[in-house]
Length: 437
Image (cartoon, rainbow, N blue to C red; front, side):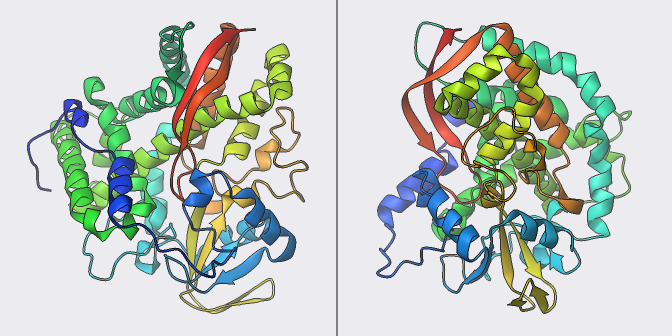
């Protein structure tokens, strides 16, 4: 793999984030208003950044939980909106493919003239998926979680103790990003002083809206090649060293991943960074937002900390940090009476399945003692269920426990900005102020 001079996190002071670059692009390329918008085209980023997604999904769950959108910014696709059908589709990975050669895992299409493709094991089918997933899975076993718990708790305590009690601050930046980038740095054995690069790369890699802005292709590719070069230096440092528990060493010492080419190495880095950063980060932000929106549930949790493990599952369900995953039909199929053709794109809207009233009564409400909260699909289902789910749950549980130890209540006070995308579902900024309870 090629290498280049290693950058450091100081470059972020002058480098635009993905969202900033997109905002500038949209100013120069304002979207043309659709004279006859399809209310079931839920790929529009505005639905999520303006928090308007609940009504269209509720209508579809009630009247057409499986339906086809013939025209969208991302081409034709099937909406899969209910809990039962998503589980069914995910349980048939040979029929409904995740492989990037069939379209991959997001609603965005690779442009036909693009040769910049990043293979990753979540966007692979069996058997290759199995071997690569098994390589990194040991980093997330119950034994590893127990080994890491004290360190996660120590870091969480440090972050919470650094927060001001007498003035507003951005919860996303000071807590959600700081905790998740720190965890990623530990998992990768990544230089601590440069950990904010992981957030920067995650945003450039995981924003599907960038596929609508071809003018940003070159900038995105340059940034991800810089990521690859940085990690290649870490790889080269460790390739002849004894095995260690970090993810790079696990790749080096595995049959399934030791001979990856540059693009596959970069693709799996993107998967692990986006999976470990965006999802946990946005759930930690959703935690602060959700408990503020439902003060009765916040009080219930404050009065009974034993509810924290269940509340973790409920917060993940309620937030659903990745709105969708995509599958592509490998042959013609009947899906509960719907005629699916080979090559059809199916978008599994986790964000809708987790509000399915037939599974979760009062689904729009955060209920910290909800009995079946663990049935959520935020981590997916089947062979592609999130490999790092236990770690995400552990980080969120420890955050709630350490907040409880400090009797810390988070109150929204000012500006809040949501992610403008139909894939990552979360927050860019959230001004808060702390109080004691």
